[in-house]
Image (cartoon, rainbow, N blue to C red; front, side):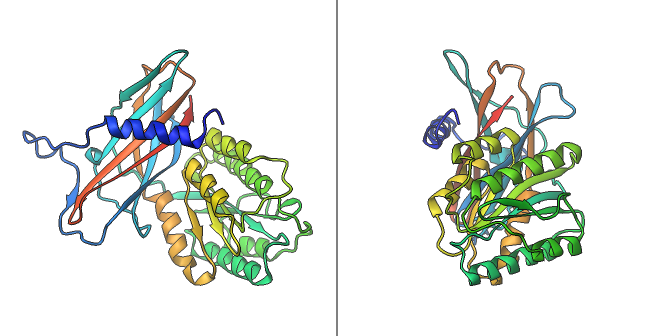
Length: 330
């Protein structure tokens, strides 16, 4: 990665400080951010950018997909364009540009998801951890929408793709989970997630209507991969595929949080299958009920930008705000 996470967050802080917020226009009541003063439940808003891509219809268009949830992961779907402020940092030869971006229609839902699921069978995963993981993945499969595609990738010392083609057939996917894999006892976690990124990217290049993601089930303790954490995050940023890390057992929280936070995903800790339906609904909601915003980058002269999104929502608990940033290569 060209810049560290700390630098990205610092840039985000600069933008958040520089932007003055979604002010209401007294002359035009339509130009107001959505608010709900009777909403006492929402105490915090969380925002992620699962994907950024070039527009298929605009020659110089960028589309940003934004997920907004409350503190419990429930999707907030009523926001309008005035709840959002978008900016970008363009790093040129000698300058850094900061621009206010034009926002076009929001609340666009993408119906289909393509998820590569990595499953950890390394020696650090206990028998009960593996049982819980398999139950969780099977429940994920049974909960999926009919048009959702998945691929099962198992790993330990080596990585094995259990169904070579992404499938939306529940029976095929359950059989892939049950299939035995001779893969050793070490932990090639980064290699497995890298394969998931590569496979999901290949699939979505052909199936352009789906939104790709990697769901990485593991305890998160890497010890044998040829792929480094930096290479993994760089690949995620290049392909714009978010990584959702899902921990079992004695979890490497720092690594799993870093992978999720820098790639537009989220980290979840799921010790049993009892919480899987809630977890599925959270992830599915973040990938489906997303806001779509676009603009033409006619003034951008650099190869890579940092896109910063600030979200504001006023309710019974006051004015809630959240800011997120993500890199994108033009």
